Image (cartoon, rainbow, N blue to C red; front, side, top):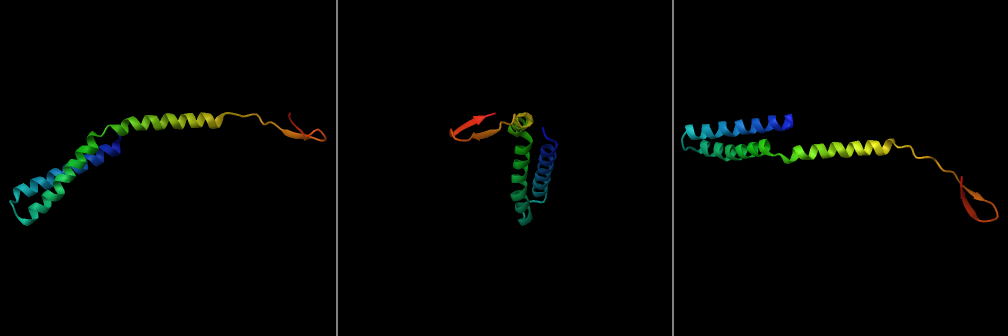
Length: 94
């Protein structure tokens, strides 16, 4: 799990739980409904970020692709000189 994924997931989850607790403790006033409106989605998004594992599988694939590109770029391709041999209209590789 990525450290940024962990931090943002925990922050959103804790923020959502705090807002839901504030809404339930304060009773059913206008402010409590606003806290619930922000708290429930924050909790849901925080839990989704925490338990989202697909990104963990994508990162090694990206690293392997970058390694293959580096290997491909480091290959030395021999330079071939192409010249035109006068009267015969033939291209020769030297």
